[in-house]
Amino acid sequence: MTIETKTDQDTTAVVRQVVERHGADKAELVPILNEINRRLGYLSSETLQELSTLLRTPKSQLFSVATFYNMLSTQKRGKHVIQFCESAPCHVVGGRQIWQTLLETLSIQPGDTTPDGKFTLVTTSCLGVCGVGPVIIVDEDIYGNVTPEQLPDILARYS
Image 1 (cartoon, one colour):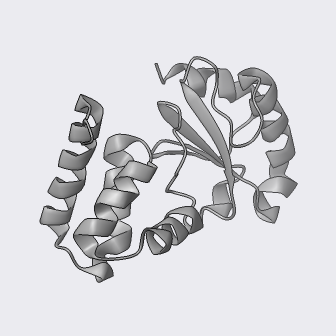
Image 2 (image 1 turned 180 degrees about the vertical axis):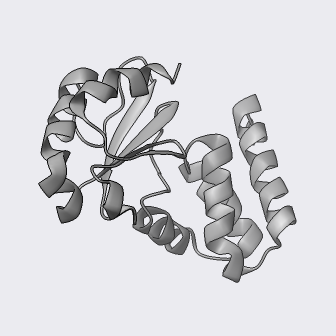
């Protein structure tokens, strides 16, 4: 007999609510994963197992999709996710300086989370806003034409 914890129950409830809202349709897989990821913070093994059962889809297939998209995570992330655009257009207009400043300010490496759990730093290819590079996204907020001097004020907006 398995004893479910409150966290397991909460996770199961969220997965079931999301599937009910979208329908148990494989065509809705990415929106389902995205909503679960947003609500729970990441896609845990338990989450993928519950979803596998509800969608009648192998967990390995769900894991493949979950690890393919940068917006999804199978690892616990910080309260705020910073996405740094590493594409060439952002790089040539000062992206390297932004990157170095982020690494120094947060004292973490790409993919890591700050010890206080506040920020996770991830890199991504083109964000589609090359005209205002360099660009970072914090959660869903897009910042363009970013300078190293602006980073402390930008990061201070997120408690």
